Length: 324
Ligand SMILES: [Zn+2]
Ligand SMILES: [Zn+2]
Ligand SMILES: [Zn+2]
Image (cartoon, rainbow, N blue to C red; front, side, top):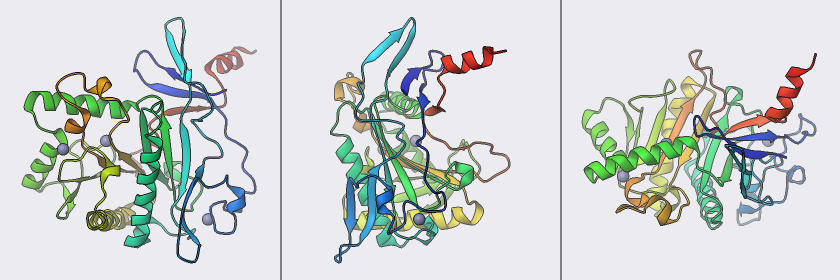
């Protein structure tokens, strides 16, 4: 029923007609150990030597994007639409129901990074998917009503609008200066030291110059790298986990609601983004955006990168509003 439609004015794709499956008993957490039967079968699980799961990944019960649909692009007059082909998976990050990121241990968070990377690499094998995004909503203000620590992995047949803008601006900068935009931002932030939150040998956390949210923080490698999933060196991964968790301890002192998004390179054939002399791996630089929500000045609900209209199609909504 749901489909992807493109708004010709903004260029944004929206998922319309999405229906959420009715949830069971809201007092039982489906992500807690012992309740695995309440979720679909795991796609991937990391277990300890005794066989107890530590991190679990399974398909979302109410997916916004689904594997089994045709991606065929269709037109309706001047409008474009297509099937909401893709994948929507959930990652339960820890057995503990009450842990928040500020109380994760380094090892525990490295296991979460491993799961994100595993899922991104796996989903990128399907060339129908243009982009794989990982995001995490925490707290009711960020639109998350299950407290148990979890994140979403979404593989989509179209690029999220913000990523398209980031790619376009990074590319323009690269074509003019032959340098990566985020590499340049890293050097300027390091030099100015005005917006730096924390820095380690290989990573930098800073508040972006034109923040969209109060206390917004970006974390990125200081060396050039286009994809989050290519971070393989265990020592560097641990360094990243340590810096990320230190930032989250500070963030959780000022807010209990936030969205975190991982911006990694798109899943595109060279010819799409690299017909010219440059390739996306030269000009795109992966980063993580932490978007706090708990401030009166910020009315934003969840910062999903796709607008999702629940249940009613615009055609049905118009019919409803036409009734006497
Ligand atoms: Zn739970
Ligand atoms: Zn770079
Ligand atoms: Zn970004």
